[in-house]
Length: 88
Image (cartoon, rainbow, N blue to C red):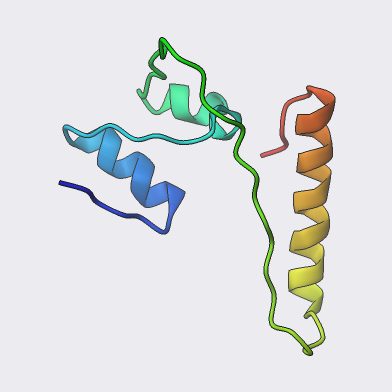
């Protein structure tokens, strides 16, 4: 059966405490996942890159908190693209 999670914290907790597997972009695995007793498994095939999008309500001004989060997200994306570690 399939379980859908809207939270990576919930996802990691389910896999960590139960008999589950998950599929997610390798870029999301930082030292946190390994230190939480989770181990990435090697796949014998390549996976396509995953693109993400940021959505916001049309015709509404972005709140300062949302704008700050978006800027942080852009900074992390720049680091990933450059091959560095994401801040966390």
